[in-house]
Image 1: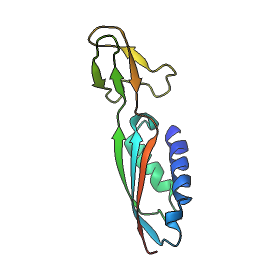
Image 2 (image 1 turned 30 degrees about the vertical axis):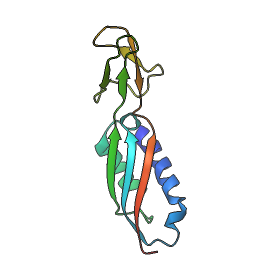
Image 3 (image 1 turned 180 degrees about the vertical axis):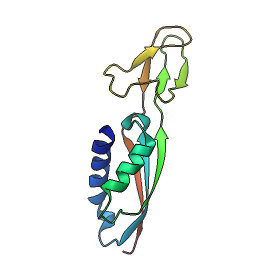
Length: 123
């Protein structure tokens, strides 16, 4: 369900893009998106295919650059990338225990859409 709201927002934003005026087709959509924006890449891709049906985006290849959240400990300076499943996207307080010193470490990144690029045909 979370993926559908995210996808709908992305598709609506893309379809409002002035660069699509007069376009007959979009051959590729590139998204740099945070890993915490979806639970399953496969479900996200399937949802995208459904959401773009009947639009200029229908049939476009979807390329994803998935940005993982990062852990940074202020106490010891340890930094690491959080792997899939290590961070709950619904948590309000983005902290974890540092694996090196057991202090509270901040989780940042892995959210939002940082970049959208389109390959547009037929203007």
